[in-house]
Length: 335
Image (cartoon, rainbow, N blue to C red; front, top):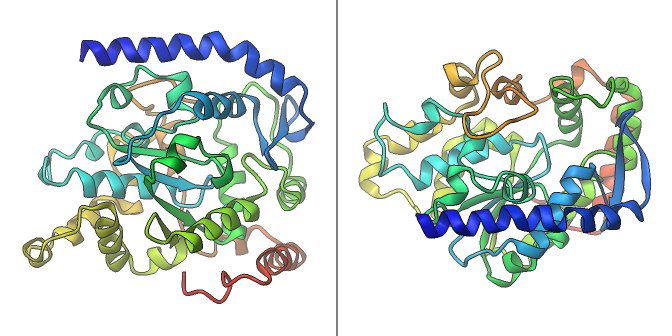
């Protein structure tokens, strides 16, 4: 453990040592108005970033070293990330805990599956990064910008996508819960217009999905592709598929004993939302955060966009989706 601590201290100083260089690179890139007055989005690699996330990406690209048995939860923000983190953690660690001792009952899922562009650069001494037995990581980084070590070590990854209309509404309502000093959030219509132009954090969203879709088609043994709406409708078979893909398949005995159902129930939106750890203004235990734990559990419903978007907005985004995936098998797939 002492060696691990030393390694992480080196990483911490490594980021501080390189941060000025990252900032100098970022200063040369295109900046546009974002969703808050003092929070411009910055173009890098065909996607738009907030400055800290771009610093974190540049650091991860240089210093994150993936191992072949690492597993990555990949997603665009607000597409089911928290749920998928809970599921992967519960699946991989189910033999270590019983129904009353699982850490998910006491802490937020984000504490157990660290972001390589947030936790790794900015909070390298959190417990989960110091624990060399941990093989679960997460990222919102577009596929073609992932650190080379992830792509070259053939790590497995799961990608979840969600209807772009619900993704936008979830992002916009989530942004209201941020403890931000960057000024008030812009209105729904303006944010929607920017989202459609790709001017949202990690955007354009549809390019993000398409990048992982092409990677999945090229290598389905390495990437599992999931759809949020389909999983919400009937999680059981997808949780079994996910466990199998991760190398933690459920045994016949476990299935007979209802272990799969227990994992589904433990990680369900309703259960996680109602845990004491995820209520009110409770914060994660391991590091400072700009969102309270409860911010990650709003509705999780399919079709909530109908309460926010006009028919014109719906037509615009559906048209963008048709155009983006034209000529691919994406729209006709069952995923």
